Length: 99
Image (cartoon, rainbow, N blue to C red; front, side, top):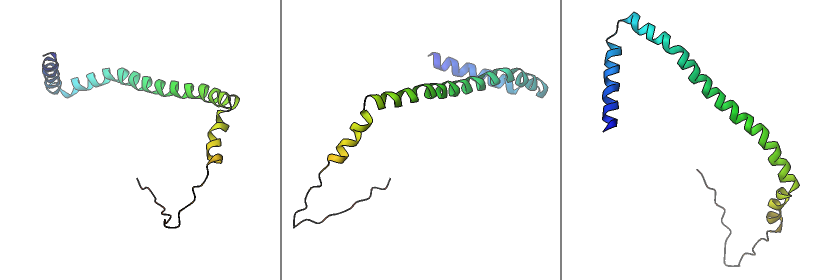
């Protein structure tokens, strides 16, 4: 029920804003500029904080990966893979997956 009330209120505000004189709409737009600038700055700060988080954590992750030898463990299964011999009645078929 509250959703319909909010939609009705939005419609009332919008129709009231459209009915304002052009100079009054300009005054409202100028008054809204600081809020829009703050919204933009908050988005920029979120992006900067994510970049700072990555700059701090990625080198530590690489260091821990080197110390714990998990990088070399990932390469071992590839080196230990044995190619299966093909039977005389089978053909080797290569397939390419296109996404």
